[in-house]
Image 1 (tube, one colour):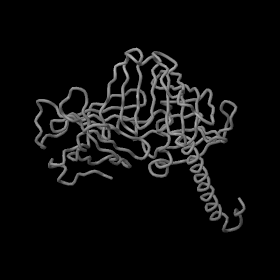
Image 2 (tube, one colour):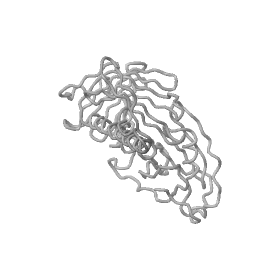
Image 3 (cartoon, one colour):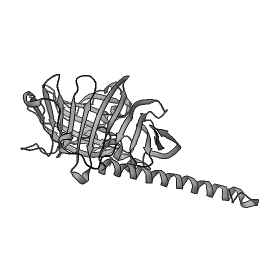
Length: 343
């Protein structure tokens, strides 16, 4: 470095090194912003391999950017050949083996790559952003971004981004120790000037499919109001409440509370359901959460004040355990004594 001389050498070296690291972070953030704009606005279609939980699945994706009217279609090329189509604030999942189409009326319902659009918001808060040596994937020059969690309560990302188009050609979800638990790799990717409506329609003969509609806040028809009777005390660092709704699910006559907690990148859904025959008096201590894992996802379940509380998310088991165990009714003595949601 130019400043490494005489008695001021070490000081200049530290300043220059700090400036170099800051420049790398700014450059990486700029690339991250380019990727997010590409995912939101570009038309793209291609084939990718999704590896998770010891399984490999090949899928085809057709995506139309916001400029032409956002829509997306995902087709499994393996197994039953299910399809998922998202457009006009609605997600439809077609299951040919069961002759069922599941409709989710939720404009925020995401598909495979939309989760990457939270990286820029989260980076610099509970994650560290850096750039690794560039490489090539499928003949394309790529830059490699690393998004590392600052604790073991969330997972990190490694993303290979096409230098020319800013599209993510490969992504990995990994633990804080670096173990890869999920991977997506494009085997081919094109960027068409336009995507016709026909490419976004199901290829399956769906005229005899049974329609199942899952209720959600904001869906057509009357919906229960948001539930304000629950607090979350001692949430894991960085997590805050970002969504609160109630849903009518199946034949259950009672509305189920749906809370979403996020750190800007990772998110955890919490479902609170009244338990028949259980007393709710605000006095009962919650049972220790029972935790299960399925690939990159974790789930924790417990009973709090006569309600079944289930937390599910693509986070480590300790995170869903902590969030499920933090739920308390607002009228409970623990909540009055100084709990509350950390937002």
